[in-house]
Length: 97
Image: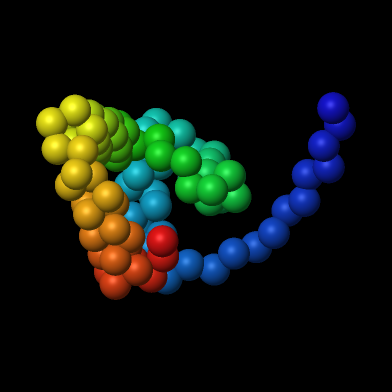
């Protein structure tokens, strides 16, 4: 695959530039490589790559699966109430369903 490379100039606030430089240095990579990675991550829907975020996502998924299993098996009459409340909170706090 022959991909055309295009160069652009981008301006950053000093504080943002300092933070990006520090992240790049901490990951032992170039600023340009870090920036390309961040942009690709955003274009791909913001996939989680940070180990801390992956851990948090795993804990959330585990908790969700555990609670859903408990509700289905031990309190099936409450399951729809919990789902409705989840929808209500998603709309109220996150603006989505």
